[in-house]
Amino acid sequence: MISLTDARTAAKRIAGLVRHTPLMRVPGGTIDGLLAVDLYLKLELLQVTGSFKPRGAFNRALTEKLTGLVTSSGGNHGIAVAHVGRTLGVPAVIPLPASVSQEKLARMRALGAEAEVVGPTFQVSNEQALRIAADRGYLYIHPFADESVVAGQGTVGLEILEDLPNVDAVIVAVGGGGLLGGVAMTIKEQRPSVRVIGVEPSGADALTRSLDAGRLIALERIDTAAATLAPPFTGQINLELAQRYVDQMVHVSDDEMQRAARWLWDVLAVPAELGGSAATAALLSGRVALAPGSKVVSIVCGAGTAGLSPG
Image (tube, rainbow, N blue to C red; front, top):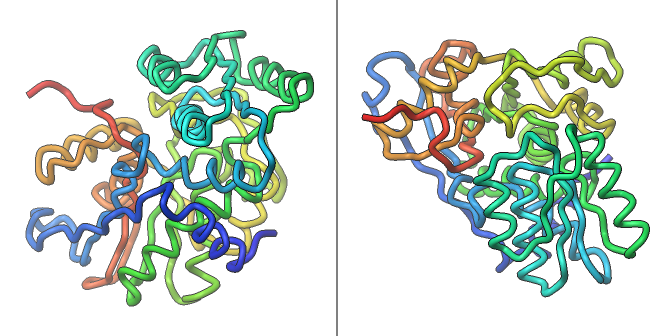
């Protein structure tokens, strides 16, 4: 189990390599009466590479003497590892599943990574990544089930409390659960009264099912267009952190995320990818009940235009 000290150490380790992203207050009346809360957006879409992922990737990489990096993520974590490799001057190899988008594949390659599709599923590409790590002596960085990665993601929580000490609730989108676990731990260890709420797509709810069962549950089927929130499983560290620190899990549909992404862009000019809008979607769709006037932070965790229709 990681500690608050681990997150604080991570913050010092990655300082100068990542941004302290802004906390933007949503002007009163902007939500047209849908919410009575005092809403702030933690704009992790303004982080280097467009998501929170470099926090954990840098923190893990800087704990080792490196000859190279390897991972298997076709999403924002893969892009982050490519960026970390370029920044630290070591090669990055990213075997990928066929589901990777051409846009994200191109971004990894543009950052200098050796990125290739090697199999139909994450399980196949991840096995290849582990073989490369063993054969070449490269550091394997898991997208979410790694203590140093989770501690790095926890620096988001440190920044929230630094910028808004009297926050009442923090809402976090969930893919594998690394961001949720890190943020929940850093928030709750300092302010136990703050509610921490996780948000999963209704068609990709591995963490919720694992919490309900009290053990790790792998999904047989994924049904969401929010690819960055769609791993079929979580990790033991993520489950244990959620069990200890998370107050509530809720679900949102793809349509609700799309409407939230549209609202973020049309009203606030915030270009969030579909998964990046999930926390805000939970608020706009009424999935979360909060007292009027509560100071609420919604983490906008990824940049992009997925879910935004022309117009």
